[in-house]
Length: 107
Image (tube, one colour):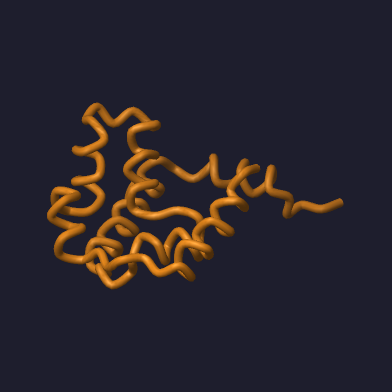
């Protein structure tokens, strides 16, 4: 019997205390705020999610601010400011990698 199925992993994750999950989430966000060199397009190409996805997910979880406020919380500054200071133009290869990666998100 396979005890490592996605359903089993999800059930185990659901058992994680909320305080522990919250601290891990905050550490992830702080890490991404420190690592501006990790471009959103590269995160999307590798993992199928980025800072903007995290902002969407906190909104889905009940964050009471709007999309702009959620993105500012995750980026550590207003989105336009972050983009001007840290975002580089995406290459055709980055866009292709992102599209292929995001296609894997459809569960």
